Image (spheres, rainbow, N blue to C red):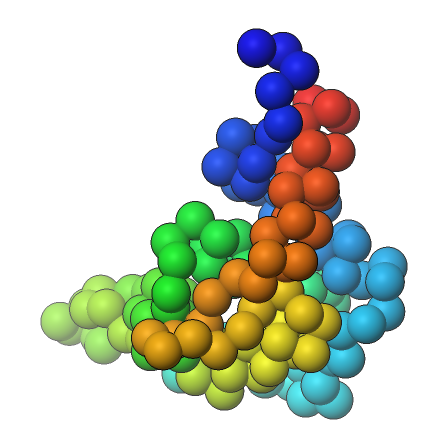
Length: 143
């Protein structure tokens, strides 16, 4: 069906995240914290992200994860955005990401109206799902 409505699950993840991050940046509703240019995204990282728009990209990625996976809390996001910690001789054990970054992004997504608190973590609101599907439709048309 070529004219079927597109959802977030139907479009490539990378293209959707970039389009949603541009939407968050262009609307101006999301308030970026003052510490975004100096903070690391995890304790095992050595440097802060190079991309100045990393906060919007992470917010878009987290919104997509909530859409696809359902209820998730800060702990689940810390696990998802973790990575390999380099401990020297016994290297590359999994380490969790920053809870402060995840919490700040979830609060901003709540303020925008994309996410709401549920009984088991955060979840996408109906209006947030509608907005994400609309942006996914734009991505599908441009692809």
